[in-house]
Structure formats: C-alpha cells, structure tokens
Length: 190
Length: 316
Image (tube, rainbow over all chains, first blue to last red; front, side, top):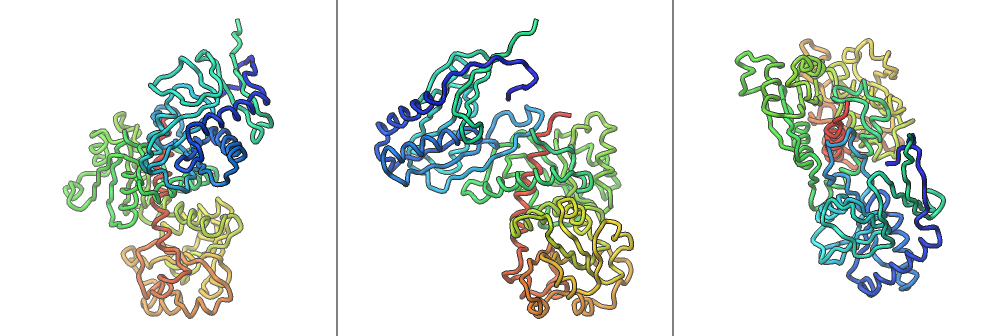
C-alpha cells in the first residue's frame, strides 16, 4: 500500500500507448503457445490482476475472432501466508470461475510480480477447483531481484529493477482514469 | 483496511452497522467456498478454537465446528455434562484451564445471560488468558449474535437488502435471545421490526428498543415481508404464560390457511429447533415460503466470516 503521508517521487515506466503495445505483444505470445484456446483458460488474480486479465481476454477475442475464451477471477485472500501476521485481516474479493479447470492449461494473470507470495497462494487456491494440466504465469510488470520464493513468470510485459522502498503501481482506465505504470520512490527528508 | 471494531463477539449491541456489513459481505465469499467441491481454506491453520457448550445445541454447535474445520482451525469440544463442572469447577477456572492448553478462541454457549461478557472481562485479569477471543454462541435469554447475523444474511440474500424491510418476530419474545439479537441487528441495518405474541410473552420494556408491538397474528403477517417464528421456550418458563400449547397454536401458530388469507407472499424463517404443530405447522415449515434450511446453510458461512475476521485481528 502507498503511504500517502510519505513524500514520493514518481516516474512513468509505461505510458498508455506502451501498455497497449505490450498487451498486444503478450497476446501474440499466448497465441503461439495456446493456439485456439480450446484447452486453455485465463484466470486473473483479485483484486488488481483482473483488469489486466480482462484486457488480455478482450484483445485475444479480437485477434482470434473467437467469443468463448474462458476467463475467470481468483481471490487468494484465504490462502495467503501472512494471516495473523498483519494487524488486520484482508477483506476478500469475489472468486468467479464458472468453468472446469481439470486438465486445462491455466494462465494465471497478475499486474505486478514482486515477492512471489501472491502467486504461491494462487497456486494453492487454484487447486481447490481441480487439477490443471499445467499452470503458466503472465505479469505486466516483473520486479526483478525481489523474489522471496522460487517463482518466475512465463510471459512478462516489462521488467524493472527496483528497491524494496519503491512501489510499482499499475493504473487502469477503468479504475484510475488512465492506463499507465508508475514507479514511486520515497524522497529522503534530511 | 477495513476490520471489525471489536476483539470479541459478545453481542450485536456493541457492533456498528459497518461491522455487520463487513461480516455479511465476507460471508458471501465463504458461501461460495462451501459450495465448491473442496470446501476448505487454510486461513486458520495455526488457530485453536474451543467450543464450550454449557447448554444443549444441535445447529449452533455443529455449525461452529464445521465453520472452524473448513477454515482449517484445530477444534476441541467441551460440553458441561460429563465434565468437571459437575464437581464444582467455576466457569473462569474451566476457561483458564482450556486456555492453558494453548487455545486461541472460545466459542461459548451458556444458560446464564451475560456469561460471555463476564468471561471476557474476567479473563483480562489473567495474563496467560488475556489473549483469548470470545464468541457468544447464545447466553441464556440475553443475546445470540451469530443467529441474528445469519438471519440478516438470509433476509438480505432473499430480499436484496435489509434497509426498509419489515420483519415480524413472532412468539416467545420474553425468553428469546434470538429475538433480542435480531432486533438490535435489524434496527442497526435500517429494517423495521415488529414483535408479536401473547401479552404475557412480550416484555414491557421492548417498545423502548424502537419496535412495533402487535398481539394479533394476522395483522402482523399482513404488515411484514418476513415472519421469523420463534419456539416457545418451555425449559425457561417457570410460570404458566398461556393456558395450553393447543390454544397458543390456535392464536399464534402459523399454518397454511393463515398464509393463504394473505394477499402476498412472505418469507418464513425459524431459528430452530421447530416444535411442529405449535408455532408452525409442517406444511408451512416445508413449503416454498420457508427459508429455514437456507438459514442453516448460511449459518456456516456467516460463522466462518466471524471466525476469520476476529482471528485475523491481531493488532490492538
């Protein structure tokens, strides 16, 4: 979470046009591996990954010209490893998966890959719905060298080197009025 | 970050409308989970819960136990019959002993009104027990907060919202903890509440809670969107409050004939256990109007939400 009280310097990593180009490139990469998506499903991770996954889903439908690519949302709140290690419990979002994932190729989609703990929880959560044939990970931003678990993405929009004190925020037209990725750096007050 | 304003759930009194809203919204996610093939999540895997039941219970005890297990908590069950309570061990000593075995939460049902409030207060005096969180699963004729919350959830699920809805609570209001908790909860969420029953079973002060009072069942049914039928609690009645069960059933029992006289469809609820043929007949209890078994299903989801929100609250 961004602490509003702290003074921050912000730098745009990807602007609106870049975000669109990146989404298109990622879609073609997906098509290379998944062809017509007959045995593949896209699952966005709540709360912030669903905007990215919805864009990917929309773009794929346009490119392939196929309306029924399976797309769902996964909430990982109850599978997190920091329950009772933070002051307050996190409020869950909705999970919406109305198709079978048994024996399917699952593409997990999130906006930022940082410590890898969210993805660990997502892998745990997804197993409650069945045994997928394989699971891949797509992220818009990969914060390199900050992983706490051995988890890497298969499809990456952009990689950034960042410090722990920095924050990466992905904004979407739907919620923030503009598509862009911003790197926040706290300003040292001497 | 949103979280409950309380550390224990001792009653609905003391909760805010945001607390209730948070519990109901969280319960929605748990209801999804308990309808999946794998009904379990790992959230409470490092939490141990003791269910202390000093009074009989079927639904509440099983519902809590299932809720705890589906959150992956470790569960121990204690019931006063067959325990050292019969040898004279006090409530506080019993709780301290259970907590000494590294238990984090206590779910308690007790025949004495205010028992869970008393326990929560007393345990603060013992440094080794002060960490414990208490959930009231019914204390005598005082409160039964989880029942009120699952009732609120079930009404919201059926009618879309609580604000502005008319709920009639019918029967033994005097001895009912469900009635008191329901009144607090429904009023908090902006619903209108009416109590209906024989004059002897409606406490004098009840009007001060802002509820309507009615002694004619048909008028109450005509007014309401939801009728919550309560059981006559003979085990708590030391006096005769009405001439006979048969006469009670005649005037305050709900049957198909009375429902058919209404020119609208109302939702029928009952917290259980049902005395068929007294407050409600079988053809009504088992009809399409009745959401009695939905209430039981929702009970697990609502209790999971309460356990999750309380157990996650480690900050002061």
